[in-house]
Length: 341
Image (cartoon, rainbow, N blue to C red; front, side, top):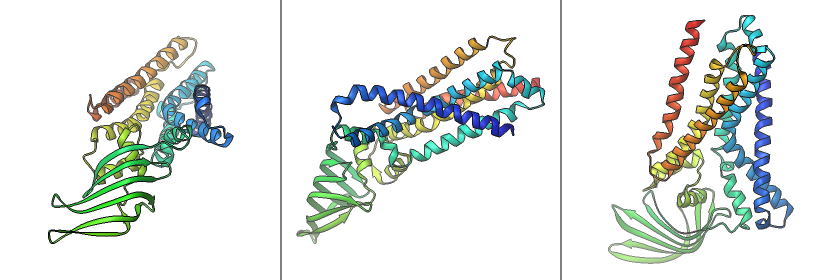
């Protein structure tokens, strides 16, 4: 019964806070970019939807902590927390609903960030650019191929002026030229491509339709050019198939998406055990202000480390340090609290 009461309350406060902050984010963005958006109302609504999803990915870790602090404030202020303790509930019993909900939300958002919706901000930018969001002069090594695209539109999945060099024992054995290629069924289809094949020290020329480069996804290619974002699944594909990629940047993005919300969950444990039990004998306002400031400080430090690691100034594993520090703090505080009980 206590689990249902606290978990429903937490979910309600979380949704209210997250939706409110995301709507504010979308409103400010829309006011700033309205002049550059298409005149179509359908495209503008779609743009706002993608921006809302993008904002939710950014803000949900903070929403986990802020909504918890709001509930904790109410529990203390209206003497609910001290009543639960008087009835014999242990801290672990009261904390479990919050951790269960927070971790479930983390799993849900991690799943979303493993799908195409993870690129919501790129889709919004494509709408803003009238679907002309193109990359140019892409040169990548993929498995035993060296690939050059003069132009790529990751939204419509078209590439132009393609050169594909197939390697065998570090020597070129086949060259494919095509004016245009389309990505379908996880492969690139080149119509009437010119194929040069090395046979017995001679190059044989042919013109035919070619299907090649499985899992060489436009979204991955585009993001390797800019590398501002990447989904968990595409990160796995990139690390598995692509050669000479910037490992530090990719893992920095992945680690930031994982350890930032997990660090916020650790803050929930920390604040719960440090919170005063009774409203009358404590300065609850001061505790809440300190908690909010500390939360923003931790989130800001992780964001700063992420920016530095993505630029190659710091190694990607530095992002884990705040998480480890918070975990140690939690273990110390919980142990002291249990010893007192």
